Image (cartoon, rainbow, N blue to C red; front, side, top):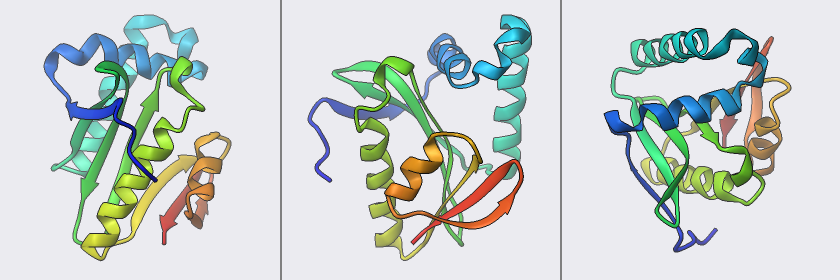
Length: 150
């Protein structure tokens, strides 16, 4: 898959906090009833959990024509490249942006001789995208699917 010229990544910066909150809220509509203060606490708790599991977490902002449209977080371990989290603003979904990001990560994992893994909620539409990109369900641990490529 050819990386479009309009697509790029940059490292997450502290000034991205408001943007990350916006993407998180858009990706977690089931939590909208919590309101901003509790949603922010939920986001911070998720991030602490990711960092506890993956101390070397790499967090990037996804840019389309230099405008932030989402984020991707990955972690390299000796066993795999983990797709820890990925989120896009709704108006930028279904445009192959996520597919380009994931395909690039798959290529990096292949070059390193490692599988790539994602944990995804069973009913998350992203599970279909991952399957389309060659991931398979390694284990079902409701409400999550553990997916692996290849």
